[in-house]
Length: 127
Image 1 (cartoon, rainbow, N blue to C red):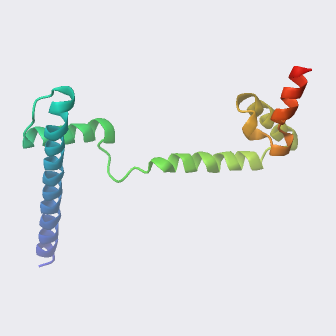
Image 2 (cartoon, one colour):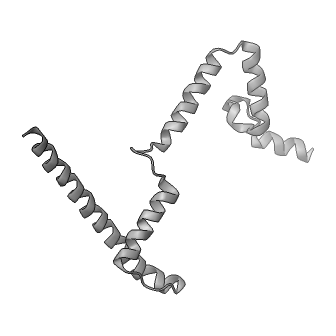
């Protein structure tokens, strides 16, 4: 009796997946046939070609792995790693790091009070 409940639940998920995949395939087919023949003179596609295109794009761009990929997770990991590295630096290492970063992006590493004013540059260049 326990297996029957899981079978029905599994069947519902399969039908839901097939339904969503079919709907998204239809949307891809509709958008392709609406836009691309006029934009780039492409031929129209059918439902199964749209489904294949959708599956191919998933393989090429989304991979075959399970679960959702959180693209922002990498940037959070990098930020945490940099914060830990910064916390373990000596004052001399921090100063060297700041000086090196000023070479790459000078205005973002200085406070506004340290930035030269535009008026002073123009006065000194005209003298």
